[in-house]
Length: 247
Image (cartoon, rainbow, N blue to C red; front, side, top):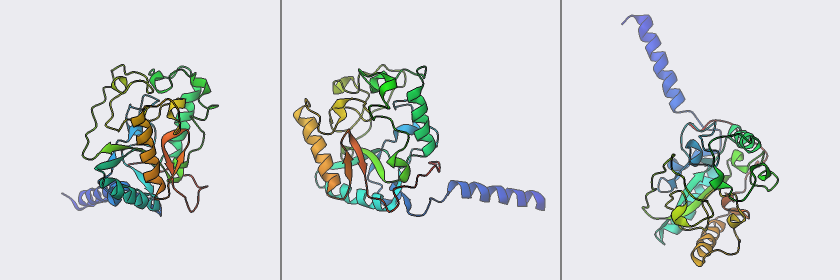
């Protein structure tokens, strides 16, 4: 190999290494580095979400959060381990380009595939007005997390992209597969049944939601009343939004 070719090969290798080890903005951390025992089922890098396709900005299923929020989750996980339970995260930091893609999906009456199982009984063009889709998200600040409770050492059943799963608010056996404790609805279910204090839930679902809310509240997380899975952690700068890709 000539000196010129050797120099080019070294430069390419260094560039590839730098890309692979892309640094995060100051104050951010990968949850795997803080607590690898917390399960991750990152939905927006897959087709198993309400848009039916991976969202822009998600090149990898990896939970990134402000370090303070990640450390607080570690403390929640330590408490839950005593009950043979674990947290499982569905989404953490969300690039603003993904938030914009959600808004475009909500405004597009011709978007495919058909994902009405996520908004049973609702018109898609009403999701904005009803508060289920927003043009800005606390996720883009790195302080919001979507999660659930799973039995310790649970295994996520496979998702079949071609299957016709039932309503997210229907019986557990008919919903898309999830190893979550029964919370009364699936994650990202646009329904009043997803409101944390919704009535008409079975005793198990009600108790599981309460267990999750209390476990998170003990370490500073605040639940969003319309989504049992959504929690926010106090931020030093809640106004700044980020758009770096998850990779």
